[in-house]
Amino acid sequence: MRVIAGSARSIPLKSPPGDHTRPTTDRIKETLFNMIQNEVPGASFLDLFAGSGAIGIEALSRGACWCVFAENDKAAADCISENLKKTKLEGKTTVLRQDVFVALTGMEYKYNFDIIFMDPPYDMDLERRVLEYLTLSKMITEETLIIFEASLDTDLSYLEDLGYDVIKVKRYKTNEHVFLHRRER
Image 1 (tube, one colour):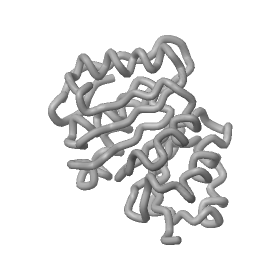
Image 2 (spheres, helix red, strand yellow):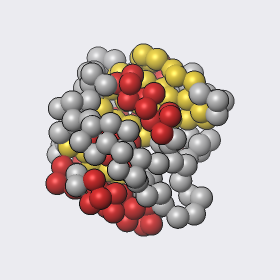
Image 3 (cartoon, one colour):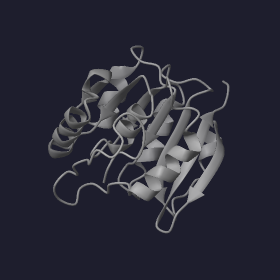
């Protein structure tokens, strides 16, 4: 696993030990960032369920102005910090070593995000819980791009009822990225 492009291009990234995380492959990461390349420069980025931090680090390397990482697992959060030091990007970041829902509540009224990426454990409905929270959050606007990674059989039928418009769904062999905007309230 490495940084694909930008200021930290080709720097190898460390993965957390064990099988608690599923690092996004370089190929999928490259495809994802090719799709959002015009939104990333100058963006404020939130990486939820951040794992190794590879997605947020890629965003920073490609010109995002800052990134908040939320990761509850201690080994994974330590890995994010090590990867940020290795890429020399730690000055543009905050690493929240806490539960994602505690982090979201703590960030309310303090941050505004242009892009939110989340890669929660599959089939636990965590993306739905985050989206329910964000429905009324002041951290995002109708312009905020929300992307989540999910298993191919994840039920997306609730998104419209929560007030989200699906912009795109990119399917891979084993998972998918879902791109959303919150509708005007």
